Length: 542
Image (cartoon, rainbow, N blue to C red; front, side, top):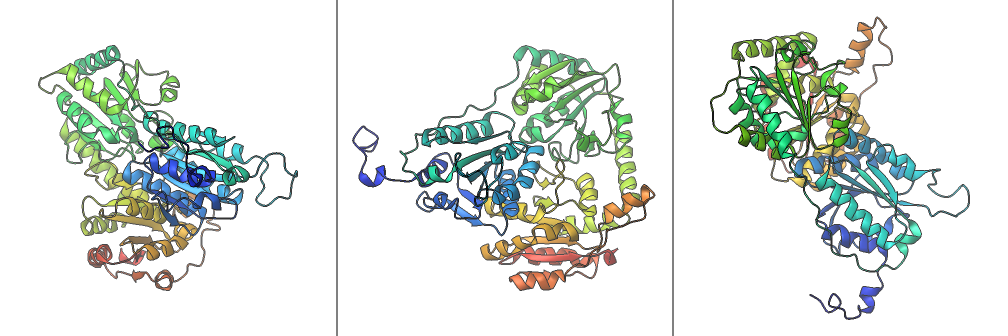
């Protein structure tokens, strides 16, 4: 322990450090490694201590890009993503990524400056009527630090929440004068407690219900991503069938003959779910974007069990017989242990499940003609462990249902909030967090233009990142929806830039494959390059 830590008076240099520099020290002590953001006159004090604290800063081209980078970093690494922005417009630009992180349960710490209370009533630089309240709409909490000790306490509250509860973004704002004021060193970080297991008695009851069922079914969501070994073991012990949500893909191995796959959103999946006499829903909200219908489809006589880390999800559930609060891995593992050794007893037909999967593939192929052939070419050209970050685009809508994930956390799609512009910056954040992993961005021609400036960030950092662009020169999904609603397609066509020329202007590589067979070699070159490569895909391929 240093002399200062043992009670000796701190040195003059140690005593005179602005809070902005102390915040960097506190973040590093709590395990932070990377900050994504843009400096400005109101938050420049946060930048005073970044290098000294050993933190890396990634300069985004837009605060929205910084937020999506933090989101991708968090998903790829399992550590919180941190975004640093200025007062007013900086935070407003960050709110779309925060909304996406909220809906998809991603741990983001948003740090912003703010104007002090008690100033002139209006016309101050970057002024908002209620900045803290605005951020509260898309975060688990939004708080303003009153002093240095309060700021440190809020940081500990944030990191404890990321570890112990359902991960959600939070916002901490610091008044400009407070950032500039001298502050004491931050205290040592608190030790967050990991989420605990569910109640042992409820676990035993759940295991008994599943063990007695003739057709047990598991429905697994993103909250079970870290419970893949336990989920697979429980499914095998029971002989259970299974579904996953988009976020839960890979929790069950794609080759499992009793795995229906990621087809909860197919309308007739309700017919398959209704065949189960006992259902365990783990780490899944069963939201609109999971099901695309009002009800999941449980048989009225089915015994339903919910396992979730979020008590609010369970409190809103009036259908389930048992509701277990706790960690998915601990809960699923405990159920398997209670069941003990024994032969699988589930009465499910692998042939029927295979027929259902084939039927759903055919539906998707009919809805989006030719796209499955492009998706197959992409799969063949990528390593099986590639992480894909997709945007709201037709090719991604088909792929998220049909692309098999060999492990959890390999495909990330902005399902809940449904924002455009996610794929490229999120993939950049993931590649920064996992530099040795293959990472790919998949965007549509319109959505890419929301955040295409972040291609400059990828070039600057020398990231070997394939950027796949589905260029159909239209808002194709909206056109289809308008036609289905008997509305003449309107405002769905815009002039696109020359994407290849635009990429080269930033210093990136660019390719336009002229056949499906050319996609694989283009991906191979892109993954081996010393910077990003834009790969333009067009309907002419099909």
